[in-house]
Amino acid sequence: MRKQAVLIALLAAALVPGGCAKKNTESQEQAAATKNEAAADISGQTGADISGQTGADTSDQTGQDTQSTGADNQTGTETQSSGADTQSTAADSQTGTDTQNTEAGSQAGTDNTVAASVATVSAEDAAAALTQGNTLLTQGEYESAATAFNQAIAGKDDLEAAYRGLGIARLAMGEYEDAITAFNAALANAGADAQEMEYDISYYKASALVRLDRLNDALDVYNNLEAYKPEVKTYTGRGAVYARMGNLDMARADFDKAVSMDSKNYERYMEIYQVLAAAGRADVGQEYLKKALDIDKDKNKNRLEKGKVYYYMEQYDKAKTELEQADSSQNPEVTLFLAKTYEALGDPSYAQNLYRQYLDQDGSDGSIYNLIAVSQMKAGDYEGGLATIQEGLQKASSGKQELYRNEIAAYEYLLNFSEAKTKMEAYLAAYPEDSEAAREYTFLKSRSK
Image (tube, rainbow, N blue to C red; front, top):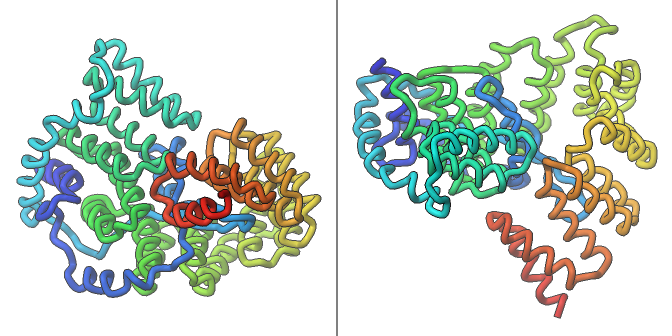
């Protein structure tokens, strides 16, 4: 019981000076020394896939996050933070317990702060609002979900779950500071015994910290998680952060731990590859892809997984062979990766047909509309690309940030700088953390005069 309470204190106090678990000093110094060497092409995460995650499956937070600038589709990686191999004990963590008391006091007015604009609601209405918020999350309606969660908070209904939901909604909308505030409030309202929800909240919090480039703060969260519940997702998350910081040795150590615990999972190897490729070390990532091909030597099994591995290895003919023999009726990913493969092989027209087939199976994925639009714009069809983007904005429930961003690019290619400027102003209001967009806005103001 005491150990569990200490963990919750540590998680809640991770951003409070003096409230963290004791760090491995040497590892922290290495991280600080390499922070400026972080891969420049890892983009900020949009949080588009967040709504579908649960405490049992938060490892997907480190999955692929595609964000396009102009007509170039740049693949980033949604990373999670991690830390050094610090093992916190209950004795070492007493400061964290004291900090919990301090933070609990500072959180006394948090409920009213977060829900200040929401009138007090009955317990029954608050419970209904919590349920509604969770439903809206799964539908990608993040602003409406945040409103519902604030109503649940005002009614004091399951504050941990309500603040968790609010944090996820804010994270998905790119409001990372507000997301962290909500996650801290959720942890402050946790029970004495750490449960799956507390671990889940901490993974989300680490993800928000990474998106703000507060990598050492995120490492603190992961250090605490590793001390109490070392899991595959702990090591993939931490490895991803080390890769982003440029600390390849620490990244590989964590990735090796992850695959040793999950050696038969093709997705794990591909996830690691994408992280390393985004950090500029695709050569090292290729080593993990080769290991994935050793999982099953039976040529008639796991064709989708093998096709995806070959796709990431840029062996597109082999990828096409595997994918064309996979059963697309059982998994729409077959169609998706066939489309990507044909595009890589230089057949964008057929690729677009396949993307459309995929959308017939799942029209909610905004990233697919974006892929089609980027392909159209690369071919010089800017009007068609713009139409596809606007279709995606109407129909998709995820991936909207990249669609908004490329909508601006389409207007620029069409030389409609006035409309591009107007769209950029709306974009920056929704995603103020995008510093690259802010710089481009300066350019647009000069062109639209």
